[in-house]
Length: 203
Image 1 (cartoon, rainbow, N blue to C red):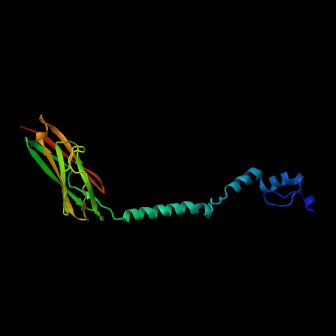
Image 2 (tube, rainbow, N blue to C red; image 1 turned 135 degrees about the horizontal axis):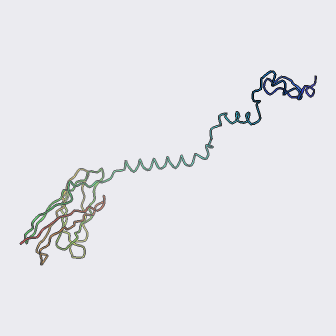
Image 3 (tube, rainbow, N blue to C red; image 1 turned 180 degrees about the vertical axis):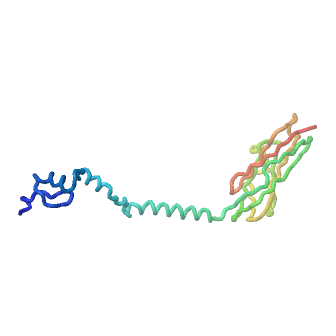
């Protein structure tokens, strides 16, 4: 019997059954259960695991190179020697200040691995002046910008060295009694340091 004469096979057991006898064969041999359809076979095929998404290596090369360069630059920056200015306090209350001069010295230490260069200092008011003291020498006395005094001076603290910043307040500058704060600025290679003194003038 040719394949054409045999017809399509049974979708359940695969036996060769003529088309006109297929319904009876399924009912008699396999019972009246649901026959597999194209939809069910498609559903079974859809349950098969899919392939993982694969990105070509060439597309990953540039992002990976950029990440590597960033990591190298960041590591080099962290390992680079740098100065670290440290002071255990940057605010001081002078309390009651009579009609005279009063001063306070703030410690300044270089806790870094590179020299701390000091490039000058200034204050926020003509009543306040500042002097920077280092192991290599003391600075002139700086005042408020535009009120005279030296304009250029450089000092240095090597790693581990300690100096000081002397803030000087002169009550005689004011006609009236003043109560408040004054600022002292020190320019360094690690940035501008700002010290604050508080005063309360009394007679």
